[in-house]
Length: 359
Image 1 (tube, one colour):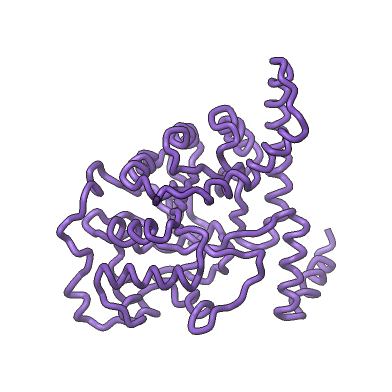
Image 2 (tube, helix red, strand yellow):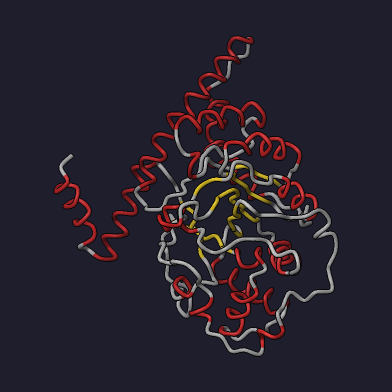
């Protein structure tokens, strides 16, 4: 409880510059017992592009990249067109595909990633075939625009640590655009890359609180997952929901689609009572075919407390489930218990990521 000592502790790393940052990062990973984290990196953000081009910043093996694609999901023509023009690409669907391919080559992402708000919609039949629309605003093509000024519409100061506050890019699907089906999904199939979706945030419930004013919708449309998995069977999807009310339907969907993986207790679900309830339901319905928790840390040292309390809660759930097995006459071996724990804490995710439905 000595605030001065706490400040001295952090200053002892901060005063050493990059070397101190690396040392602090490694300390956090060791203390939290986490092997690696996946960043969310936005190629449409000028603030992040500078860390990748013209010279890519080298990160330690503790960090992997995920490529944020919210503008493609939203059909956000202004942001996409400015990004293409400022980077010298043709402002066409093929230009957008090549832009995304080149960023995949640069970032080497684990997956594509986007967050969807409470009013995310994907209507029946929307993606049944390719429409005649180009997805490009031809009039906008005639107007020169600066990528740096137009591509970022909200505060973009969040460090790339895979944080709750990193969903600042609007993500509302535009069903009059082909950016989703003809760019994002095409490249995902070409590169065999999954798409991770975080569903159900209600932005600016209290605008006066700015970035702290976001809330949660009571029921998000979980049917979007069924429709995406059905229409794009060669693409793998990872999904997590913000509302408690969507968790049961998510489990049912995960049991029906081989290209869907459920993960984590996100944001407002990241408290012990919710983690316990959600994990118990998932174990009962999915066995170990899900990922029990994800880091989702806004600042790096949140990894320490998030994983300590998550492990304790998940362990309590497993103890109850193994007790049921014992009562039924089945005695799990130490190897079986270790196998189950490994799968819940990353193994199931890595097994899902190793799958391929493109062949």
